[in-house]
Amino acid sequence: MRLYLIGMPGAGKTTLGRALATAYELPFRDLDEEITRREGRSIATIFAAEGEAYFREQEAATLRAVVQELPALVLATGGGTPCFHQNLDVLLGTGHTLYLEVPVAELVRRLQQAAASRPLLAPATDAAALTERLRETLAARQQFYSRAPLRCAATSCSVAAVQQLLSRYQTSS
Image 1: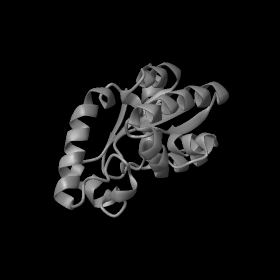
Image 2: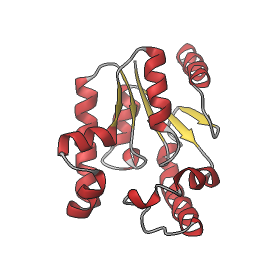
Image 3: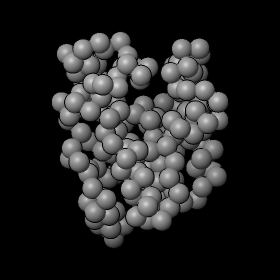
C-alpha cells in the first residue's frame, strides 16, 4: 500500500505520516526531507538560490523517484506538491491520497513560530499577515486538495481515524 498525505503547511502530514507508517509497518518518507537529502541543501537555500520554479521541478522529480523506488510507503508531501507538474495525478494513480483538512486559524497557531523558516510563509511577519497568506494559499490549492478521495476534516486526525477511513474506502472500491 502507498498512502500519500496532502494538505497545507502545518496540517500535520509528517507527524501523522510517521505514526501511520509505524502502525502499518511501512517505510515513511517526507518529500521535503527527500529533496533536501538529494539536493544536499535546505529547502530555504534552494528557494533563495534557484527560486520556486526550480524547487517545484525537483519536487516533481523526487516524487516520481520515491514512487518508483518504494512500492509500499507512507509519504508526507509538501503543501504545494499536488498543485504542480501533474503531481496529483501521480499520487491519485499510484496510491491512496488523504487530505488533512485543518482550519486556517489552527494552521496559524501551529505555524506562527516557524513561519520565518518556511520560504513561502516568511514574508508574513505577524499573525494577521500569516492568516491572510494562508487563506490565499488555501484558496488557490483547494481545487487540488479536494480531489483526494480520502479526507480527514479535523484539527487532530488520529491513526485510528485514518485506519477507519482506509478500511471503509478499500471495502467500497
